[in-house]
Image 1 (cartoon, rainbow, N blue to C red):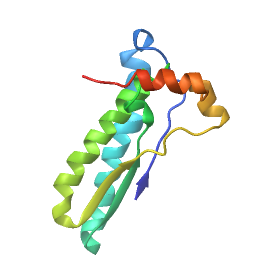
Image 2 (tube, rainbow, N blue to C red; image 1 turned 60 degrees about the horizontal axis):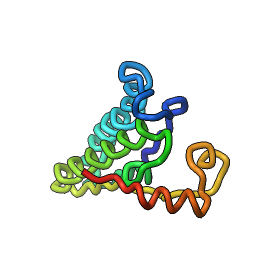
Image 3 (tube, helix red, strand yellow; image 1 turned 90 degrees about the vertical axis):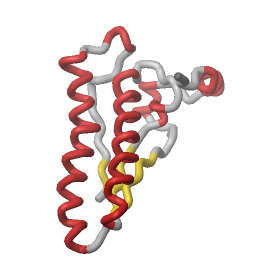
Image 4 (spheres, rainbow, N blue to C red; image 1 turned 120 degrees about the vertical axis):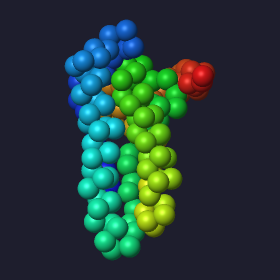
Length: 130
């Protein structure tokens, strides 16, 4: 099973996020969909002796990207959920992985952040840390 989902309209800075609207929609479309889709797939995979679940993550959960607060944090949640699923489902011969293709050059990503040399330098200096 390969799962990937994108939500339009949830981009914005942290202080502009709307918890009960945009942020909740992003959560449902990323974390919620990963959980429910995986649970259904696992029922079938157990019958055939195993399988693999792959979900899509994002570079935005590792480095700061302008206007990506809602999506970046929810992609981090998807990665955490995939680690929990992997740990629990390993005994059934089911692998779970989250992959991120990294930044690419297209019209969509240009609207989120610039892939210029100076944009790359700025992103590298804004690694997310706790």
